[in-house]
Length: 324
Image (cartoon, rainbow, N blue to C red):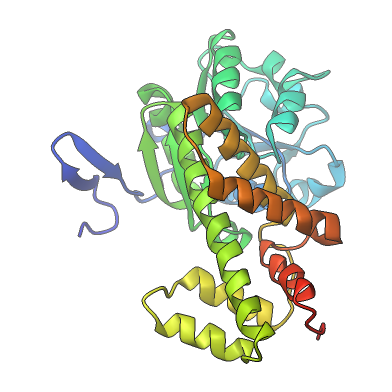
């Protein structure tokens, strides 16, 4: 096993996994000018970590007040996406979905208009494969480069710069973006193109959604038969199917803590994007379809803004179990 800071781990001839390196200040040893668009739950801590790493960061958010804390800490504020993207080495997007990405890029005062030749647009949003292909074409028409760099991790991981990032794009663009990506993450997995990075994120979230749905269903199955939910959580953790994810979500469910770490509405969106990718690729994803339907039921029940583990509350209600 390679130690942190080594170039990578060989899997087979010609294949390597890129690991994180000690953070450096910038591209070719200099600090960079970075525009950061979208300073919400995940974006704000990432933008702040870039600022703390010595980069000059200009921030924009649709709701301007959400960028004010960063401006008070030393970031520059921008009135429009175009302003935030103008004269920058890198421009980050951290947005909710593909529609938000399009609105920020192409709307009035959009970021594409400010993107200079040789700049790199880095999209850390989960916007899907179709979006990655479309954005790459539009960015290329500006003489700029595109890197899809979706995130794996929570807000806490973002605050601690412990995210995992799957970064896909041209080699020269990844090289330019790499110091900034390392400043906000513990590990960067690099792929050769943006489409592959976008697809990889959908694979991960498709599996995660299925895990959450099955776990909540199992807890409700046990509870409806009179088993103590805490004992079910404990027993599953003692089994061959144990998982840090199950333990974390089990603790939230036991506490009826639906505080969003990853909202159900976003989880449903990711299943939709996975289904779209599957359709385009000729694959079948019946489990993803079932999970998306379940998340849709949870949204209809008022859980859209709650954490994805709140699907357990839906299952418990279906089983006629009392709310605690």
